[in-house]
Image 1 (tube, one colour):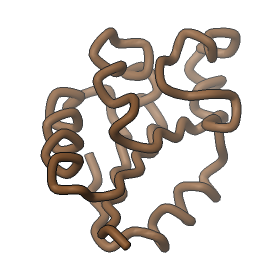
Image 2 (cartoon, one colour; image 1 turned 90 degrees about the horizontal axis):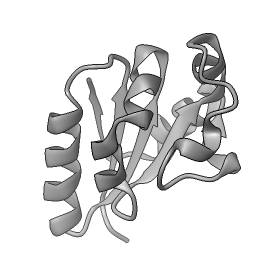
Image 3 (cartoon, helix red, strand yellow; image 1 turned 90 degrees about the vertical axis):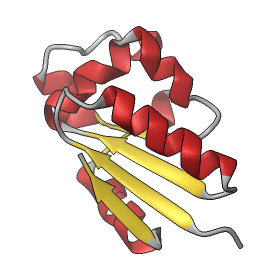
Image 4 (cartoon, helix red, strand yellow; image 1 turned 60 degrees about the vertical axis):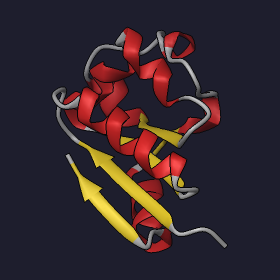
Amino acid sequence: MAETLGILVTTDNHLDSVIELVNAAHEKGKEIQAFFTGAAVHLTLHPDFAKLAGKAKLWICDVSFRANGLHGREDDVPGVDFKSFATQGRNAEMLAESDRYVVF
């Protein structure tokens, strides 16, 4: 089984660094999960967010998405489906499943 990397993104900064980390880990055969919460949900609508699709399992905090006024734009987020909008419980599961965990 491949090592797993969990990435928690909490701010609307550093998308470029998240993409670089995901690309590097993907090239090394790591399993990657990324959870976007708080202000980071705004990154899901950035055109570069699509670069993460297919390289990491992407999770979006549903409560943060709604609280940041993005409800109704779920279909605009590339690389995710409705099951990818989750609670902080999913973030806790990701932490438990990860060999390494990085926070932005």
